[in-house]
Image (tube, rainbow, N blue to C red):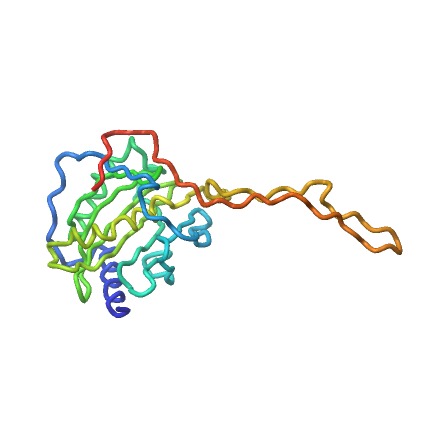
Length: 268
């Protein structure tokens, strides 16, 4: 499967330059449907966070049971299952397009949808589902789905957000098991893993330190009485045994969905 992933990676890299030859495109929606909103508690769990990326602005974790891959030409980190190259999730960071706001919000999501769709059309991407805003955990994203060509057809679910003047892209690449036109079931089987990585991303401004995930118990501060008394000259040093118990670290708390609502939530 490694050769297959390399072929797909090349196709994605060429697509990023706007040089794909495919021209089959879906019709952009004339009217935005009901907003998709998925809380973290509704998504697969994630594993251990990778070391900070993008100048310590970003921390990201793979779906539970997935493993990290080496950095690629078009992404900072990738994740895959232990026994297969596909499906695969990649995460990248870059400057947003000129003129974009420093943060993607409820107020500017619709205008960014139009801009991202225009970029997709100009690049002649093989778009299956045009851009729509979604809320994953507490974060707003713009989602689109496109097809890429490797040795076998694959579908890519792209999730993009802008935070602190940086644009972050989480892409799920899935091999289409049936006819290329019947991509939906193949994507649906893996879709929520991409959602989970995006929803659990931790973002901050340059120079700021990322706080521990919510629900993690801080290390207990040592009490004054727990310090070992310095022994007198010629006498052995002894310490009084501590009777206190360290608070066990709890699992990372699941982030609640944001309070802002623009439409009745649905599950795609």
